[in-house]
Amino acid sequence: MIPLMDHWWAWGIAAVVLFILEVLAPGYILLGFGVGAACVAGLLLLDVGPWLTQSVPMMLISFAGLSLLAWLVMRRIFGKKGGSVKTFDHDINDG
Image (tube, rainbow, N blue to C red; front, side):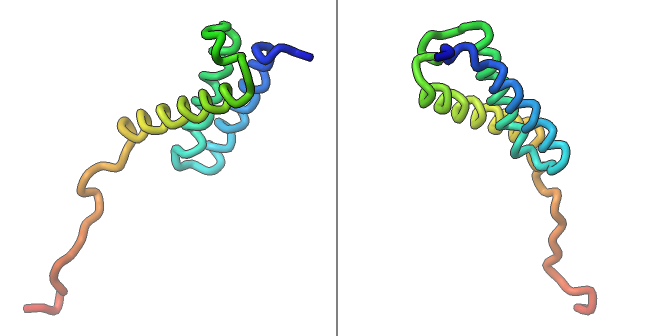
């Protein structure tokens, strides 16, 4: 059986696929998952933290946490601008 730390390439491929899907369906949703997968791949490649390679659930929890963190950071940086929607309180025919 292959040790879990040798699966960095699978996480890397998943990150590339998610990045490509983000280009096809923009919205910064899949980009967060792609960044999370790339971070897990990097952690596995660098063998940082033996807790990550203990089990598949630990890798998935790390992926979920890193994806959420990446999404929150991107939401903060690229988020909606306040007041970008114009609303009207009166009708043009009101005189």
